[in-house]
Image (tube, rainbow, N blue to C red; front, side):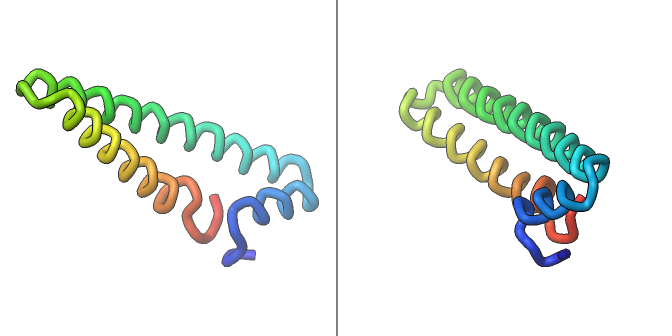
Length: 86
């Protein structure tokens, strides 16, 4: 089941036994929480850094949102929902 999408792996783990499913669910909750907090910190720091450098507010917003979106995508793809499961 290595090549299966993460949602299928979680459902299949639930069918196999509650303890394995609980372990996967804990990993996802902790992983997503850390990822979202890091993304929020990146967004806030980029935005405030650009605003303090006298950049226009709209530009600061777009750059900060872009940076956090890219980091969020990479974190999801490479860490949270990586191939091979948790």
